[in-house]
Image 1: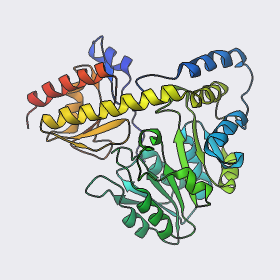
Image 2: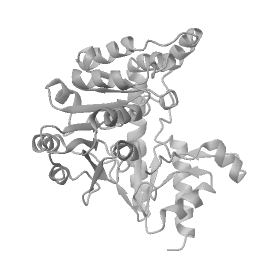
Image 3: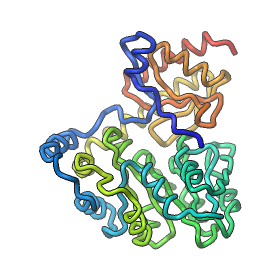
Image 4: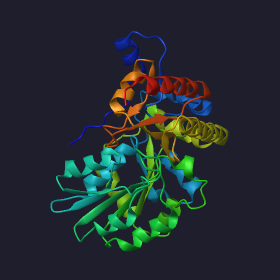
Length: 357
C-alpha cells in the first residue's frame, strides 16, 4: 500500500535548507486563503468549542441541499473528502470484489481497495492524459463494486466530457457504484461539456459525487468535504463514520464560505490567469504542459522529475515531483499568486538551463 505523500511544508524547507523565503506550489491550496466570512465564522464558533459539534451537520447539510436542489438525505459530510473515499470502500467492498481506477490517479482510491483486501484494477490514462472511460467500463465484471473517476483528474488536471461519462454509466454492470470525484469542480464547472454530477444524482443514477471545501473555498486546514448520493448510500455512510467527524469550526467555516460568491469568483479568476500565464511562458521555453482545468498544471520535461524538484527546492520553490504521482519526467505546479508564479518561472528557467539532459 503506497502511503499518501503530501507536499513539503514551508517551515520544514526553511529549517532543512537554511533559507528564509519559500514559495509553496505543491499542495493545490488556494493562494487567496479562506473567505473573510469563513474566518469570522470560525472566530465566533471558537467561543463554544467546549461543546461537541452537531453530529448530523444539519445546518451545513441544509445549506448544501438548498444550494444544489437536493434533499437532506442525499448530502454526505466528511472530515475532508478523503474520509468519504475511505467510507465508501468500507461500506461497499467485501471479499471477492474488485474496484476499477485510472493509472495514475489519486492514491487514496487505491488505498480503499488495499484496506478492503480486494482486487484493484488499474486502467492506464489515454494518450491525452485523460480517463479511458471505455476501457474502464470494459474492466468491470460481476464482481466490480466501485469505479472512481476524478473530474478534473488528479494528478493531471484533465477532464472527461458529459457524453462520455453518461456512456460509462450505461456501460458498467448494474451493481457498480461510480464515484465522480469533483474536488476541483469549481475550476471546471463553466465548461459546456462538463458533466454535472448533481444532476445525475438528482435523476437517480448510481453515482456518488464528492466535493471539498479544501480547494476553491480555501479551507484545506480545517478539513471538511461533502458529497451527494442516494439516501441508501448516505444512510450506510452515516452508520459507518466516526461520530462528530466534522468539527464545529469546520461546519461554521463551510456555511460561511458557501455564501461568499465574490471570494469564489476571485479565486477562479486568479487561477485561470495563472494557468494561462504558466502555459504561455513554459511553452515559450520549449516544454509541454498538460492542459489543466484544476488549480495546478503539469509540465512535461526531458529531465528526471526528482532532480528538478530538488533543484527548485534549493531555490525556495516547492512543487511536486511526478515520480510518486506515477508521472516520471513531470512536475506538478499549483497555481499561486502573480508574485509566486513569477518566482517559480524564474527559478524553473534557471534550473532547466543548469541541469544536464
